[in-house]
Image (cartoon, rainbow, N blue to C red; front, side, top):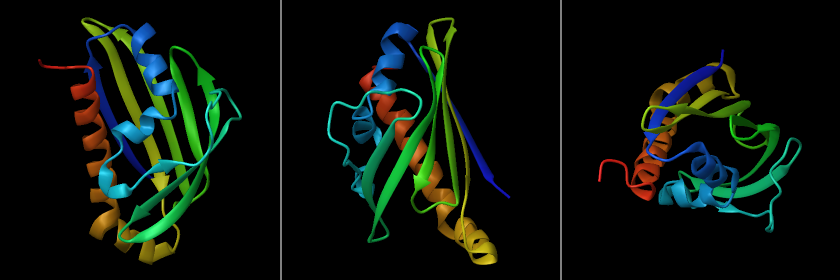
Length: 152
């Protein structure tokens, strides 16, 4: 059964500024926590559109992973979806949504993910994966808030 995480953040900028920031794959390195040692392997420029494949490398708990995602849908300035093609998850479906809101743009992350390994995957999720995923998305929102100077 997949797990679900949803986060929202009001960014005090118009979608015409916000969406391009997230559509630039290299900004993902800027908003990902340093403890993941996250690095995009796909050479620039990366043309974001449905079907684009992006390769990454990261390290978690001392283990190095190769990760590959596909942009499944790309509908500027409303949303885009990336899914894992190869990597540590059984399922990774991340929908990035952007909508006009009073005061700027409401950004919403909707993540459905699952682990392999049956009951062992459930135990790993309960012990540390859930906390790690939540920490990653909390860090992302905090960094985004700093980059867009939210609350300053």
